[in-house]
Length: 494
Image (cartoon, rainbow, N blue to C red; front, top):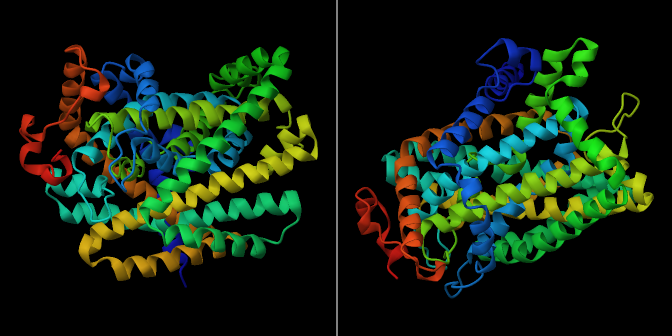
């Protein structure tokens, strides 16, 4: 009955994301979004004069003071960063990296790195715009994101609502099912727990947090994400150090595979490079979300310290770096050093990561990955929910969203349980389509509004050159011709 719909969705996903390397090589319109995202990242990297390199140390300086200056009851820059990391760090970092290596070879890791490096500048632009156009709320947590800067900056509410609907479908509902499905698989592999039990436990854990609202999400993310990320990175470093003699060869393996030196010997040079590029770029984008329009929803919530929109731009750049160049690289190192990826291995995704880690620490590795993916994906669920709530408020209006939000919370809990017990490829495919349309809409918006973000960056750089310390830097919308009338005055009244 719905064959025509599924075929239409498949066609749309193919055009936006691509799902076959040969088609990507021979059809310039297939996998369109990947090329646009990379191209946009390169453009922003050039016009900002490689800001991800110039301000690499400054990002960490801002991180050290990011917990200061929080408005009473509000969200700090650190908590906003942790919320965005909660959404970023999840299935893509543990299962997605494994899939990329399984399908595209070790060279896929190199293209994940490239995606993150150029994506850092894109993340700065979209997150800076989210801060510039944020609006206050009576719970002392700001609201903002692509829907808000599209409506206020481009004057198109229809385009803004289209973005919000796509985000609600993809992040608000479907991807929460993906995260719970990954948790259920890993838990069953490690402990033999039936998926329905895992689903029920997840619902009971998620419910009090989502019913607590955006502030509750930020508080939980701020505590859980740093601990799990540090533990996972330490484990990866332990494996690298104890197998350091093999590490240089593993890095060389990544570069040789990325540029087809190994495939050339087998006569499949072009295909091998395309496989590595396609899988590395796609999984990298899925993981770090730079340009997708998701992270700006978290960036907008912060009472930034220093009190300037560029600060959250820098913080979210750091989020892309931590997600892909640190955590994804940790997973890749574990898998490549283990040597478990070969034609005789049937496992893929999260089970492959569990198999790789068990090569070093025995069955305990399977258990550790299950615990790690539980916390990473759990925080992704609550962060995805927060994105959905913010955009539902935008569609309904901040003052009249209580009933829709209550319904949405129950829908999220339902998807968490359904995702744990079922395989619903058609729904996930539809979510990919929604996320792709959401990303295309956001990219159009940030390209059109990029002069505003670049002007904000220049204002921040000017204050630094004038000798101001970060705590002395301030933002005044009156200094910007466009923002003077478009920025919400109540968001910047202090």
